[in-house]
Image (cartoon, rainbow, N blue to C red; front, side, top):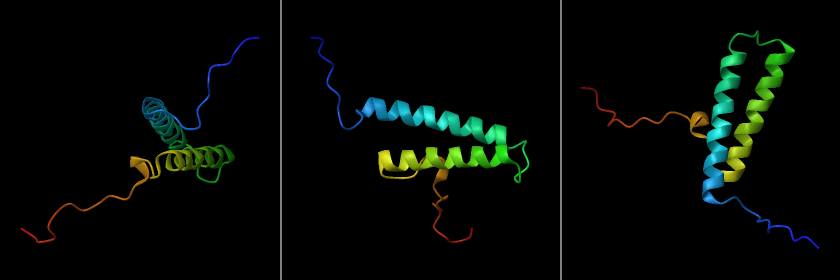
Length: 81
């Protein structure tokens, strides 16, 4: 009888980092591709859905949205110079 290698419930850190890197690369490809499509087209909608699924997967795996989906934060003091 052949034993299967043990499966684990969660990704190891290196697996998680690799997944995020690949998912981010796919996000960039989707953005580049959808940028030339009309927003009313079926292919644009499909790519937008895929991009949302990627974003959701990263958020579920890491506990926070991907860097490219986070709102920009202001790091200044708020005092004009």
